[in-house]
Structure formats: structure tokens, C-alpha cells
Amino acid sequence: MPSTELLLAFFATTAIFAYIPGPAMLYAAAQTMARGRWSGLTAALGIHLGGYVHVFAAAAGLSVLFHAVPTLYMAVKLVGALYLIWLGVSLFRKRVDGDAALPAIERKSARRAFFESITVEVLNPKTAIFFMAFLPQFIDASAAFPVWLQFVVLGTIVNLMFSSADVVCVFLAGAVIGRLRRSSRAQRLMQRAGGAVLVGLGVHVALQKS
Image 1 (cartoon, rainbow, N blue to C red):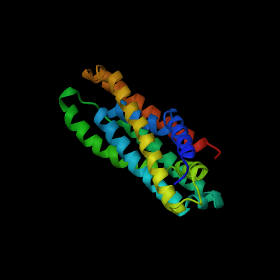
Image 2: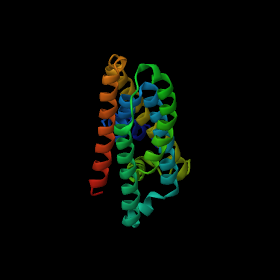
Image 3: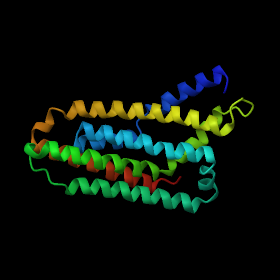
Image 4: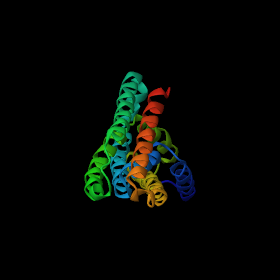
């Protein structure tokens, strides 16, 4: 494995990146605002599991393909952006019938949020590029462990740390809206706010140049 000094730098840098607000944190917060804390937590779990696709892709060198074939990168990015926009629009159109139906809605939405968040993360090529650009800085080709295994171990640590930030974001969002969810009007407002965040994220991803 890399030296102790390199590992300390790795943990410090990862923590900084993890807790800077980014799309995954905003997505988890949006799910919490629209569907409740449980949906936010399941969304964070889905993002975490989807992140492993990019960890193993980086280990296998798949991210190099995105660099070599810009058209493929753009195609995946646009699909992911359109999916985010579609999720946001669906939240705008979703009806809120009142507090009596809230528990059943949250259980159903939590399951949906889980699978949706996996799809969102898998369709995010920026994550693949990040792993491919960031992890090699801390890979030691002369270490006892093979390079691919170092990619997997370090990538798993990065994924766990980023997910911890997503969970913190979910609890913060849940604390803010916990009192507001007693009112169906406030619930509708939070749902629309969550939808707006998702649409905004989709537009932002689609307009990014790289």
C-alpha cells in the first residue's frame, strides 16, 4: 500500500472533496425534501451502491474510454441529465393527498428513490472521471498490492466518505422540514422544492462542457 504520508494526504483530500456540497448531496437532500428522511437515506444508499460501478470501472480502466471517446462521454452525460430532469418534473406532477396517506407514500417512494438514485449515479460519467483522475495520485506502482487492488480499496474509502456526507445532508434536510411536514401545503411546497433541485441539477449537468 502507499506510504503513511500519502495515505494521510489521501484521507485529508478526500474529506475536503466529500463535504463540499455537490450533486449527490443535493440529490439526497431533494429526495428528503420531497419524500421524507427515509427516502433520503435510501437515495443515499443507492448513490453509494451506484458509486461502486465507477470504482470497479476505474480499476478496470473503463474511464480511459470516456477520455478517448468524447462522444460516448457526452451521450452518457446527456442521458443522466435528462433522467434527473424527468425525476424533478415527476415530483412537480405528483399529488399530495394529505397526512393520512403519508406513511404509505413514503414507503413506496423510498423504494423508488433507492433504484432511481442508483441509476442517477451510474449515469454520471463525471464520477468515473473523478475516480480516474483522483485515485492515481495516491497509487504506488511499487507497492506489494497490485494497482487494480489499490484502486478498489482507495475507491471504496472515497465512496464511503462521500456517502457519509450525503447522510449528514439528509439529516440536516430532515431536521429543517420535519416540523413542516404536518401540513399538506408545506409538504407540497417541499416536494416542489425537491423537484426544482433535481431539474436544476439536470440542466447543470447537461450544460457542463466537460
